[in-house]
Length: 172
Ligand code: RP5
Image 1 (spheres, rainbow, N blue to C red):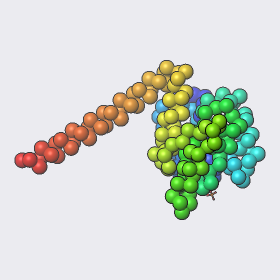
Image 2: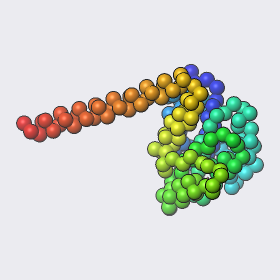
Image 3: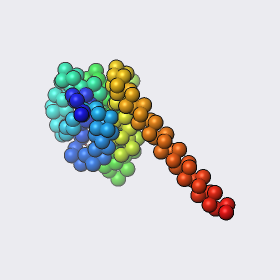
Image 4: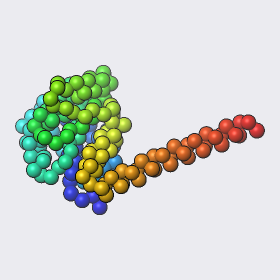
C-alpha cells in the first residue's frame, strides 16, 4: 500500500530509467508513493516547466531528477518549484558521470540541488533522502526508515560474524 504520490521522479531521458529504478524500488519498500516522468531541460523545456510548476499543487513533497551529460534538469526544476530537488548524476557519456555530477552539484548560490552519488547508489540514496525529508512531518514513515536502518545494521553484524568465523577457521 503506497498511498498518494509524494515524490516525483523526473528523467532527462528514457535511457536513465534503469538506474533511476533504484529510487522507485527504495520508495516502494518504504511505502512512499512516487511517479516517474520523462521531461528534458534541453529537449522539452516546456514539459519540464509544466511539471515543476504544478508539482506542489498536486501534493508532491520532493522531486528527484536524474540526468546525464550537461545535466541541467535538476537545477532547472529547482528554479521553478519551492519543493526540495535531489539530483542524480547519470553515467551517460565518455566522462563517466563526472560531467553530470559537477553540473548538478555546482548550482550557483540561491537555488540548491541536493546532489547524490553517480549512478545506482545515488538513485537509491535519492529515494532514501526523499523519504527522510518527508518523514520530518510523518512519524509513521520515520518509523519505517528507522526499521530500514536497523536492517542495514543487522546485515553488517551478520557480515562481521561471517568474517570472524572465517578467521577462526584459518587459525585451526
Ligand atoms: C541527458 O542526456 C539524459 O538525462 C540522459 O542521461 C542523456 C542521454 O540521453 P539520450 O540520448 O539517451 O536520450 O539529457
